[in-house]
Length: 275
Image (cartoon, rainbow, N blue to C red; front, side, top):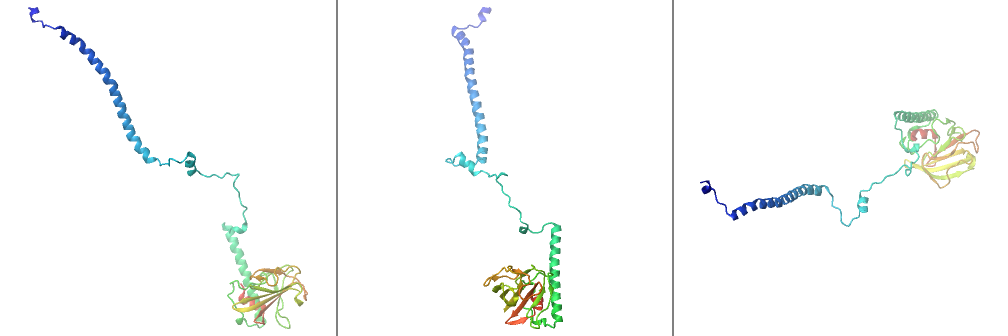
């Protein structure tokens, strides 16, 4: 009875059943490498998609014809080493006071100079007043403008006799070697080692306040003249040193002021115009 219900299997069916596992195994072996290749390809594409835009944004195009040396030269930086650096010596005259102490010292020096100039002007005014000189017509320029300077440094001289009694100028008593400066700008008319009774003398013709002014400097030390005839000088320029040449008995500067051919009392003229 069992034999009657047992299914019958043909030889073809038996052969088919034996071949089916082998085919499946071969298919699996072919699919695995292809799957790996596809995965690697997808990963590579993802990496390229992320990296290329960032690189393009951060990189700077370089001319294809430029060499590496040319590219490097554009970004080159210079360096000066200590052995190549030079240091110029500092000159005190090239910079001004910067520290509080230097500033206070500078202010004190300027104040002292101003006080000395004021004292000299006051002394000159007093001398002129005592001599009965009218100061009203002596001002030709604003005091302190620099157009008129004292021929000797303020405080370096003592006032001697002035115009009168055949004496045509003011005697400014000072030690030998005291510097003498041009009282006005102008042209040197005389510069001589022997100028009549003036001894070593200089005469300068200039213009002050629109008027012709001649100033005379006498009794200088031999060989100390710093200007020559025909030379243009500036007010305050060094022209010589105090001495006692010519008709002189002591070291002093004989200083004359002539305006329009007439004599002016020098101390009063300086007090009204110099600064």
